[in-house]
Length: 183
Image (cartoon, rainbow, N blue to C red; front, side, top):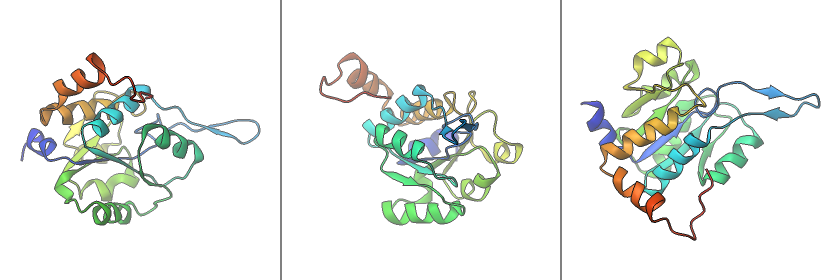
């Protein structure tokens, strides 16, 4: 099956966080507070998928209040934090959504993603993923994690499904003035 055919089937994008939605760096302040940076382009890509009926989920081994706030802001409701066994997290999402593995895309960057990425229909990674993940990926972004990799994948999926032009029309040319567009 070609990459285009795989993308046409996607109904759910699952994202890892550190190294995918962020650059993988964790900043720790003097008082022990943690900081992470998220790219608004990735946020907009997520909003575009959601606006087109393509769900987005988070599956990450770490847990953080920062992520909870960011996912609430974006409207992501399937958030699985603290998932050391990501395959179990995937199985939970499959059960909760009644989707097949072929209808799911996963974007990951490092060895904790290795087992789960092999079980989905569309395997993706940022350009700075580790070699083992890169070799498995159907889609390799031109962008590193935390700098537009998720956005590029979102656009590809929307274009493959023939939803790109309508997205531009409804979200940016003639947007709903009541819509909350915080990316």
